[in-house]
Image (cartoon, rainbow, N blue to C red; front, side):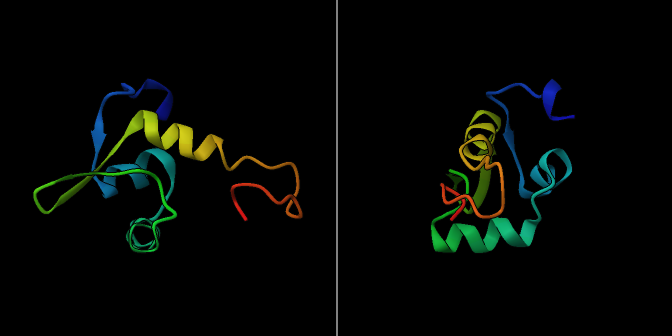
Amino acid sequence: MQETLNPDRLLTRSEVHTAFGLTQRFLEVAAVRGDGPPMVKIGRSVRYLVADLRTWIEARRVNSTSDKGAAA
């Protein structure tokens, strides 16, 4: 599904879970820790830009579990 998403579209945490497989709980915890994908706050709502999610995920690509990169 994510290939068809407009890169400028803002997604809720539920939509991120559906499109990218990241759980809502992970996104909540990562937002507090500051190591999750960039987010947009609109009032009390949190949204994620599709382009930011793709960039954030791509930056965490590794070839093995022992790789030390952005995922570490």
